[in-house]
Length: 140
Image (cartoon, rainbow, N blue to C red; front, side, top):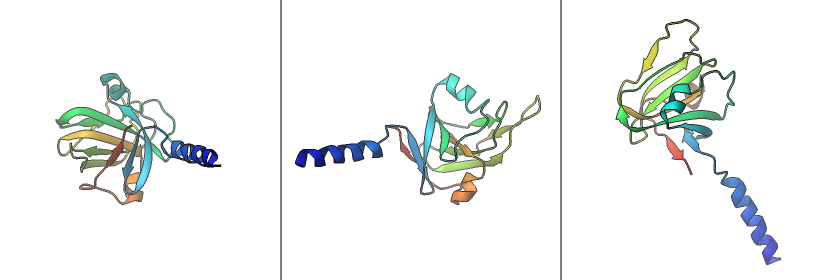
């Protein structure tokens, strides 16, 4: 009986720890794809027709610096949130629409950032988050 109890506890713990990278913002967890190489960062969320509401993409840079993103070949509207080295939001481009012209505008951070989180457009407003709010990472 004790063995069965241990197996059940192990299964429950394994289910809780999915091993997939995630973040928490505004009290909500999001499964994230990590973009930490130049190639992954250049591609970002381009050419995707949708993204589940509880998912996003986290861009991780080696240091803080002014960052700028654009929506070329991105098909879904996004909230682009910039975070400093301490995971404090320093800037947001909310409800950023896909670019459908040849010269796409860029959306620069208002302060140096080391992390950038892209979620579906409207999520920041839904969560009630903005500049000064903190991001929690679970990248294991």
